[in-house]
Length: 179
Image (cartoon, rainbow, N blue to C red; front, side, top):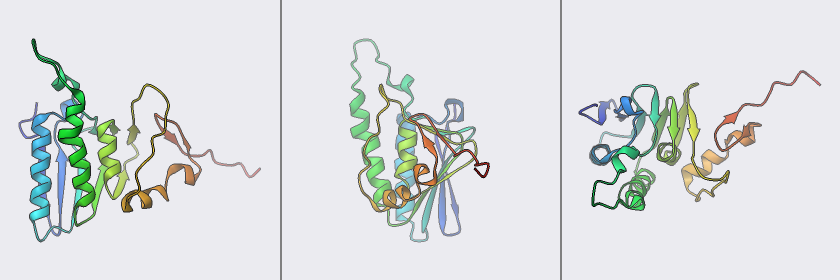
């Protein structure tokens, strides 16, 4: 397991934040939440930072919450909703409120909360290996609240480009044979 769950790199005019738990496909644990919060705060305080790029080390962007981190210890009750309120909701609000654009460079899988983090960014750049997965008990589309980045993203959704979208993946349209 990596000792540094989030790597930061300062480049000319922007910063790169890399999720660094490739052995767990960059799934979040408590240390990663704290390190990401600190890295975002540092980028926001940097007067020379005009953009932020978030990516993942290894073969995945982020598979969401490390459920092994949420297992109850003897005599303990884990409240899974507490993680949403303590970590994910503030993270998405912070990404949306930053004074500069946030870019998600998605390599490999972006699942659950990892998918939501990518979609909260202003721009999503997806490698050919990228896949966006939301897990739910039913095939349901959830409404996305209106926000400037989301509005721009919705204007270029796969469905508008003729893609067939399913809850587990989107596929490009089949090429026409001229018929």
